[in-house]
Length: 192
Length: 192
DNA sequence: ATTATTTTTTGATATAGGTCAAAAAACGAA
DNA sequence: TTCGTTTTTTGACCTATATCAAAAAATAAT
Image (cartoon, rainbow over all chains, first blue to last red; front, top):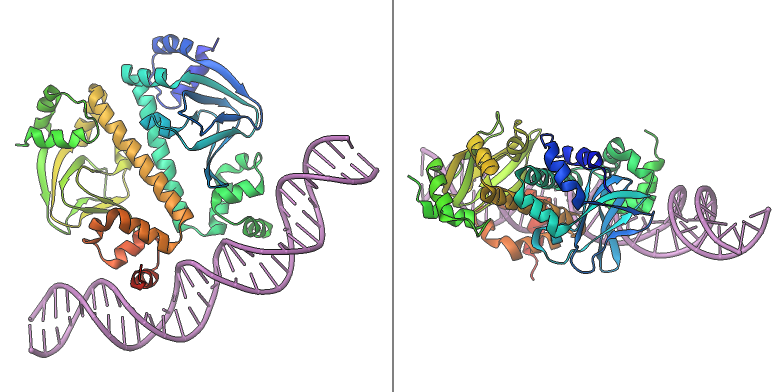
């Protein structure tokens, strides 16, 4: 039985003006689903049928480019874990989401969630905000990738997300920042 | 007096199931605004107060990084021209949008447009689709930038957007693709 | 047409960061 | 604690692409 307050905390990250009645009404549609470190939360096999709001823990989302994996983003509290491909188009996704730590989530069936978006403007606002933030995330990531050199990218990351670094290896971070692992090791060794 | 069919054509790019009544009702909120080649459509001075749906022509959106400009995207028929910063947060934007050719637009006041999004779920769907497409655009652009080398980026672009190239100089394309102009010139000189 | 201006090409050179491979260190399991 | 595995560091070398600068070509202006 999901605590409505827990749902509220998360939805309010995206829409502060969401009324209690709606929270109460939608809470029963969610379930707690927990994951252990290393568990796959979303796979790239088939259409993703469930959305997970991460309420505790850290995740890593990656795609497989042939045999090499490419880390796309790291999830933390409040993030929506799902294949956006599946969510947008209802087609098969390519992302794999894995738990970097113990993870607690509030899970909802994707179709039910889409229904909520259509039915309740307040939930639509939540969804809009999520997509807007995603837009800004990728735009920003592009700008960082194309304007900053390897060392600057690393420092920018550390200044913003050092807490995520605690849960990942150098190799994964290097892959995320698009820096060769050996190069990143050398950058990290430098003082200042 | 905007033709409702012209508005319909554009909105239907984003939501095919939009009913005629709603089109009729919203058409009067739009105005034709045309631009000549070189005109600034959206500036980075102050909060952007108008949204433009591009109905004909091509545009270039760039930001100023100190003194050097950085091309972010090219607009074509159907695209929404606005500062997304202003649209999302109501804060001042940093994008400058300029007409590469003669441009015809359907313009609407930003606040009015935001009102429509809140009021009509069908318009909310239009907006959601626009942001989703933007999300995918930037994600894709990031992946291209970080996974493909200069020549591959150029070829990928040519295979997809050669028609836009007709309206821009080599320098602007180089800047867009994050390739030095001299390098791009050499790539272009190669056969196949 | 002729000149001026902008854009593109070409050549020579420099460098950030990738690649390969081995050593060292850290981590985990028995 | 010890052995095996994974991760990180270090060294030598290489390559894609940037940079600088001048020539050539294209475009616009008088």
